[in-house]
Length: 288
Image (cartoon, rainbow, N blue to C red; front, side, top):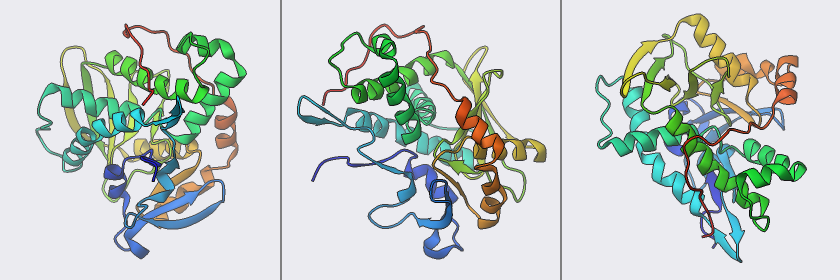
């Protein structure tokens, strides 16, 4: 059997926070955007959280061999992310990740959530097909398959962005009493006009982060009701394949956002960003 065929693009260690213990099979409430249906997806069995799986999403065939380097790279980051999410969810006064490198791994995993969804990967592949000049920016080697270039560029993007926000200032923004954050195939929201980036870590924790003026620092805060509603709305606006919640009532509240005029305009206006290289001095090759 081929290795790493089923790739979770949202780690299972995060998705488990959205399990509704009262739902059938103790699963997550999911709205499938393409099929326009709501269902419950279990976190148990051979394919837990199947709505967040892509087949061979991070795998390409290089020189006749399945290259699974990106999947292994993500896996190497996820234990640090799981530890960060667990402690943030528990509102730990002191976040303990061990050595400083584990903080970097956790942050890289967070930034990776912006690059690893099937929708983002397909969009990048399409952009390279339509504009060969972009391929030369990523790599001058014209023999590289587009899929390989896209996967290698994910590591480049994450590596660049982690340098741009390090040292980092983290705010663990907890949902107000009785509230929960949504999650989607793209569990983040960024506005280029703002210095901060936003990503959901658990059903109760939204991570807000930016570059620190001095050293690594973090704090816990509780979101206002207005800000909570704004972020959940934006998460729904930027969902592309599915939207999920820890309660059916919360999901039903935001399903109408998907397919709305605002959502359609968001889809139509999205472009592929080309970031200038500021920090990288070498590039990655995924060939095994």
